[in-house]
Amino acid sequence: MDVTPEIFHGVADITGDSLALARRAAETDAEIIVLCGVHFMAETAKLMNPEKTVLIPDIEAGCSLAASITGRDVRLLRERFPGVPVVTYVNTSAEVKAESDVCCTSANAVKVVESLGADRVIFLPDEYLGKYVASKTGVEIILWMGHCEVHERFTAEEIRELRRGYPGVYVLAHPECPPEVLAEADFVGSTSGMIQRVGESGASRVVMITECSMSDNVAVEHPDVEFIRPCNLCPHMKRITLPKILDCLERLEPEVTIDPSVAARARRAVERMFEI
Ligand code: SF4
Image (tube, rainbow, N blue to C red; front, side, top):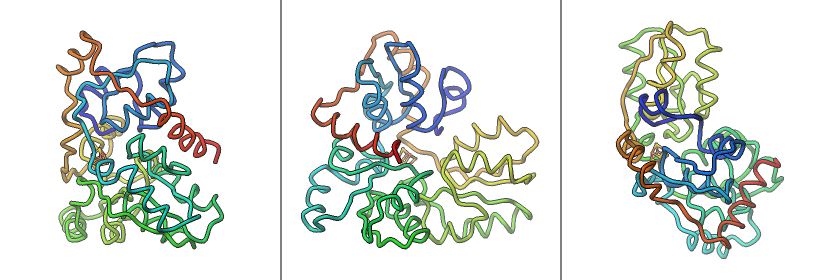
């Protein structure tokens, strides 16, 4: 969702968040998938489409959340908190997913944690999403200090200033934002939740506190709504450009590969989420 509009509306066959892309790619007859997003998204597509060739236009397109934790970190946490289940956000490497019990998205994190029926859960790697889940459940959440470098830059004062400058503005925020920002929002929800809410709210003026290309992409669908755009761009997503997509299609590389033993365990964690 965070790629620029010329990719989102211009050349993509399928659009959506990382899981929707991975699942819908599995439904096509195409043998080659070009994942126009960051590396963990391409890995997730490969996990769900092991027989297909998955390409990424820029292999260096990373993510601060995915980079905040390794498989070894998860093994050390398990040693420190024996028997405590590990729930891992999809914004992680396949290696980290492979060490986890179950994955989650920002849309289903609360449901996944509650489904485990545990008093304590290790939630990785987004501290703010973990705190949000803790606020919505009675579960004790053991946090990791990973942050999205885009969402962590928003401040509560910025939201208050937006309200002063744009009276009546409806504020939607992503749970990767710091808790004090979420406290200022009218609605807190995942990417898909925010998009749905824009339509349902009936608001004529909205601000989406998330990566700014998403507002650009959603605004196209709602020409009657005024979108206020405080712009925090994801530098990793912006590595994906039309010339790189063309180059990737012509050369059929770089290809995303995952060690089969890692892939099998990581796929299991993703599939458990789908079962929930
Ligand atoms: S917007 Fe944040 S979570 Fe998404 S890829 Fe960029 S750094 Fe990662």
